[in-house]
Image (cartoon, rainbow, N blue to C red; front, side, top):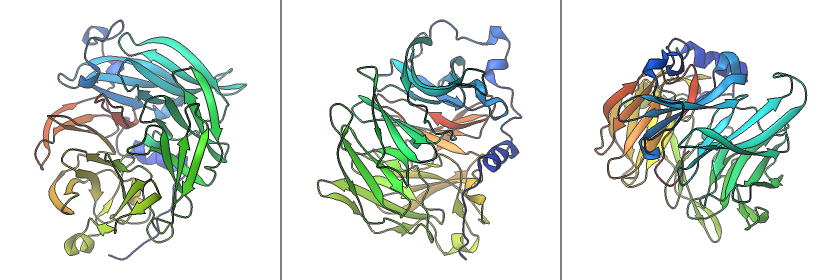
Amino acid sequence: MKKVVFRLSSLASLLSMALLVGVTTHVSAQNLPVEQLTGGHSVKVDPADRVYVMDAVFMHLTDSRFNQFDRNTGKFLGMIPTSFNGFAQVSKDGKNVYVATTYYERVTRGKRTDVIEVWDNSTLSFVKEIELPPKRAGALNYNGMFRQTNDGQFLLLQNATPAASVSVVDIQKGAFASEVTSTAGCWSTIPLPGTPRSFSTICGDGALLTINLDKDGKVLSQNRSQPMFSVKDDPVFITPGLLSDRMVFVSFYGNVYTAKPSADGMSFEPSWSLLDQADRAQNWVPGGYNLLAVEPKSERLYIFMHPEGKEGSHKNPAVELWVYDLKSKKRVARIPGLDALSMDIIPGKKPQLLTLDGGNAHIYDISAPEPKLVRTIEGVSESALQIMGWSGSGNG
């Protein structure tokens, strides 16, 4: 496969791509007749049985919302307003939804206020807000923009002024804890596997910077790894798959990089390729937004792929969904991708894969190597790039 250089697109071109793949052609659930809706007062469906969709509504970003559906029936359960292109997370215990968003006093201009909002996940009602420095990144809904530490005590919010930093919010105390400014030149927050309140971020030289927080949310220590990948020759997507002890990254050219944290820092396993000779002949490459995930028990990697890869196609929707056994580093299944752009996994005894094509959600049984489509929930959003499940240990 001849290598080409992929460049990051502008926000406008990203929005155009999402619109071109059809994300505004669906009838969204919130626009259905009221008698077809079941939400509004109390959501009795267990959090683990819900599909969560962060709908950016690109044509009117000040009206984004966090939609919820019953994954067993496909019914719309209700939504939480998230204002100006908000980010959202379901709490570790499933009781609350955390929203990171921005308000302007004149809707699109005037004084800016950034907040973390806490919403009750059983009644979908507002609980409280925590005001933050007005630095939240005005970014698309990538998983790494807004995360929780593994112990659930702190929220991690990506900032851009345009200098990159991370706001740390103590959700237990209901207060802003600190701003981590040493992440300048790095992007995305990744809760570090096997730690209660550490996170990593991807830096401009291909290294991983790891931040260890103390009990008050301040920087306790930090370390920077050697470069994991070549930024020029083999850039990686910023959202990895997470296992209990390591992070799995995939590059624009289909190479897999595995980072394993240890007491001495970060070690890297030898990289390997998703592609065989026939794949390279057809220029198969990964593409999408939140385009990969790992199921922890089976240690299978799921990733969206498309042929005839070229400069700028790294955001293209999935022509196929490929599945890999991480232990053997072999592909074990490939199925139609249904033009999906993002995914998430709900692990457990009967694990499921959720995929999103921008307007519709597809739910797969992944108990066997080859995913089996269980149902499609149509009209889950106007234009969304993030779908989530909840398993009792957090999401995204």
